[in-house]
Amino acid sequence: MRISRPCSPGGGDVRLGLAQPPGGFDDPAVLRHVRRIAARMRVGFRDALIVASAAKAGAKRLLSEDLNAGQTIAGVVIENPFTS
Image (cartoon, rainbow, N blue to C red; front, side):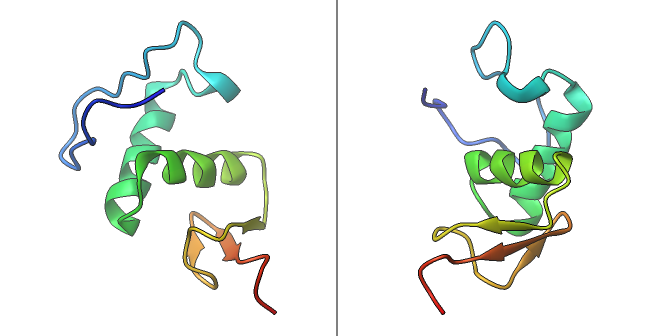
């Protein structure tokens, strides 16, 4: 699924085009949190959704080669699994 245009940091509705968003992210407050993460940390919406999912699940760390290793986002520490 592709989003036709990036989300603006200023607000507006986020519509994923799904009947039932995955992982219980049908709460507008959660989607606003995802949008804030994306804007504040300058990451894409999908990356922010992954981080928000990890935070919501209580994860302390997230393995990702795409995000900045060592950075903490929403209380989750990003680690690159391919570096030592």
